[in-house]
Picture (cartoon, rainbow, N blue to C red):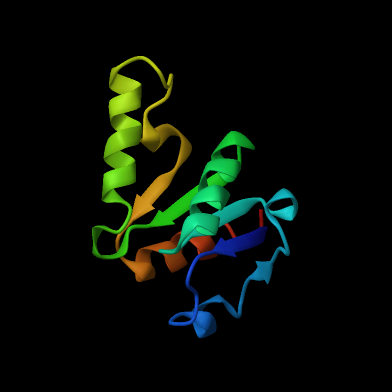
Length: 106
């Protein structure tokens, strides 16, 4: 598995040493979205559109407004899939690391 990480990673670099990292989204099998800015938002939506497996680190409810809006789009029939169908949302880094380790050899 090749992992692409987008967002502010400075607090977590040692946690990702055991994973093969991709240089860009197109090389990745899985994408981890950390809290970040406009570029990270772009990476989130590109990853979803490209059909990548996406894990969103919703630390301190950072992505909750976006997730709520995506769910509203689903409820209004604009988006055909619930957010939980195209992204996994986690608020604990330990759970994310566990998921990544479980998929390390895919």
